[in-house]
Image (tube, rainbow, N blue to C red; front, side):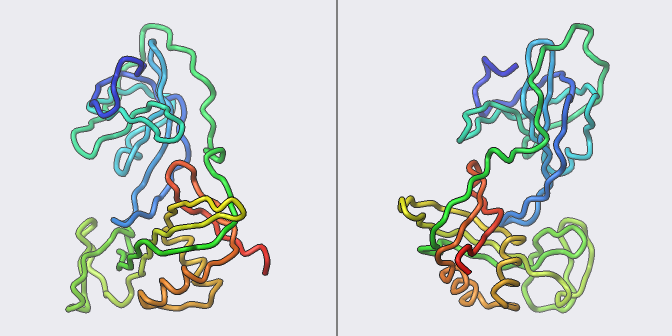
Length: 239
């Protein structure tokens, strides 16, 4: 389907959604984003497709759509070429099934556990951290000037008390593995950080306390995604 198309191009295709993975909510430095991975097939071939945000609710497996202005991407790890809903301009419209026979496509696995790995080592440095207030309803980042008790979410427009909004955390750190001494730049999002704070007995940390907790992570085992370098679990095997 994508053999003659270069990564970065916007294309329009008519294809059937043959499989969808379970939706994921990803914590990013800009707030939370909803994402679903799937597979589309037409008479010429097949492709992995990634749906973001509102597009996740516009598709279902077994239905044929016209995907207009979707972006061709290339995975940095697997080198797989796939398509992705663009930040702007993408439209998805249900349409009639193909008259011709669809191409044969491999079974689309429901998980991507093969992309994770675990290594032992220590945090050797903290590259960056951020702490921000999130909306109680949509969990997106709220721009707060700390001057008002009542704040409004720019995404869902809900007004709420600033003191009741949860704090979301983000960090990027330098990890040194043992015994090979490989150097990794890894990312932590709120879910794992909150679990870490709970384990360490840390409540409402300052930015300085946040950094101290990270630098105290010695002789740990981290599980991370090989593609995104996002940590999904932290263990202390020697405790």
